[in-house]
Image 1 (spheres, helix red, strand yellow):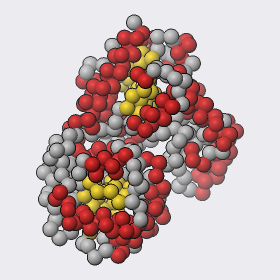
Image 2 (cartoon, helix red, strand yellow):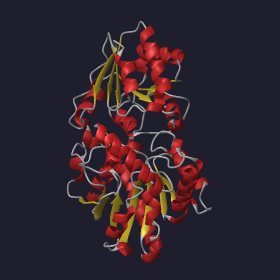
Image 3 (cartoon, helix red, strand yellow):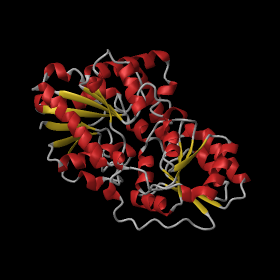
Image 4 (cartoon, one colour):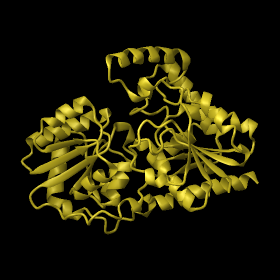
Length: 412
């Protein structure tokens, strides 16, 4: 099999959820005997909980050319001045999304890639960030046997949650839409983590065959959980709810409904939040006696918190109610009843249909009803008939290898 070159802007030991998907796939690719090499942005810290998954994987760091003060944030008054100056320069240099951290990466990334034997390679480019994908397309002219796969963890120009696309001026958004369509048309395969994303990319393509488009879900690695103790039985007095991960600002409606419901309920509830959130969210939650705010925790601590809870909670943004996120996969791996607060969508419908969770629309009445249902009927939410195998990384990795082999066979 050809060399597999994975480009993932974030990758262990760099912290961040963006590196998890390809840390896991690279681990299982290596076990299949594939020759795997990863290109990534320089590390800022060594906080990734998935470092052990990448043992034996060759990793190449490529400078991004993107202002560090914008990428990593400000902490001093001098940083704020640098931030404004850097943003001013970016607006002049970048025609599309100047918040895309890969928008300047091509200057260093492309020359580095050209040193590889690209005619004998498959490049899998992980997104977001997104801009650099379009910069890979000219490589196919110089290396006609090169195969390109785009792997979308997030929507691109339709993204309303992250990466700044919802606030882009129309002229800049059009530039991004043109890049997006070029990638969809010129890459050899398009992979997405959710079927609605796959359907969208099909809809903007130039009518190419459906075998070009694939859905490879996010998943869980059973090896992450083999040392966890057996999950405790539900507390007889307190309903323990856990939320683990990033609490996005655009879940504000659901969060406010939760806060109001917790103030008004007579039920005995304990809700633990760990992970990133906005200052506004922290202020709202800190006023509630039933809430514990733990901030960032290690991967091991996060799994322990989920394991010891009675219910695992998701708050979904309006544009991602179809998302089977990493958090979702962690929850089902530990067979936790799931409580989703969001508008209607594929994910809430999935947990209700499979009787592994409860869905509440983001309003006070629905959230109060959801709490009542959880307290009264949690024993009816179980995984006895639920098949979690489609979410296991090993199975998903095997599916990915088949895509790669099919591309290779077309090139013979």
